[in-house]
Amino acid sequence: MKGNMNIAIDGPAGAGKSTVAKKVAKALSYLYIDTGAMYRALTYAALKKGIDLNNGRALLELLEAVSIKLEDGENDTKVYVNDEEVTASIRTDQVTKHVSLVASHREVREKMVEQQQRLASQGGAVLDGRDIGTFVLPNAELKVFLTASVEERAKRRYEENRSKGFSSDLEQLKVDIVKRDELDSNRAFAPLRKAEDAVEIDTTSLSIDEVSEAIITLAKERA
Ligand code: DC
Image (tube, rainbow, N blue to C red; front, side, top):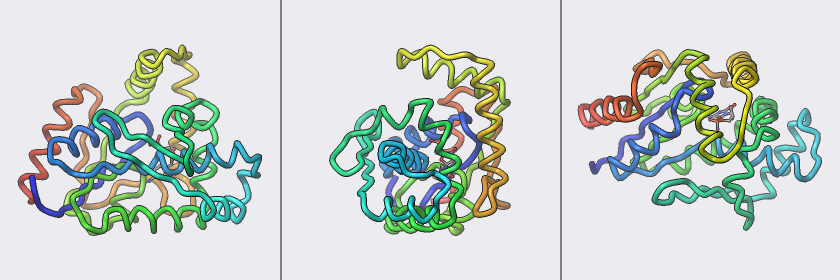
């Protein structure tokens, strides 16, 4: 599909946003922008440098000093901090545990949002995150809010980890997901929230293809 609309996909951790966003982008020949990966990349760089994650100013300075690049590949998005490929390193538990704190700082978010808006400025992009429909692209032509039960989301993370060769504890994954949702939903600045004009899809009992097809149909209707 040609055209220059932007599609915003938001929702809590593990609702299937990135898998679905990637599929939708591929089907429409759109650019996929994984905004969570950008916050993860900064978290990885900050942990590596030993920066105090409570210090928003120091994190902003780091963000201004490094370049975070997303490279849309055939099957995955490669992520770089400067020239270091961090695609796998940003998915570790260590980064996942700390990313909400890093993403809670207003100065960090403002800078990230600027970069995300620039990436989407030509249209023809699918962005997934927490605040895309409410804050990054309030005028996106299509906004989707994906949800799923905590049990289902933990199960998906478990399977995802297993397929990558990590073992994990399902109960612990549930605890971590609930905690991350709480932090992301209750932060003061641009929290996780469904935009009023977003279409909500509960993916608990839907397949990836069913969810992707629903979004592609909505996109075609609105093109
Ligand atoms: O989608 P993800 O799990 O990779 O996102 C990692 C974290 O980044 C998430 O817990 C909250 C933060 N995030 C955010 O605050 N705003 C976004 N647009 C995307 C992610």
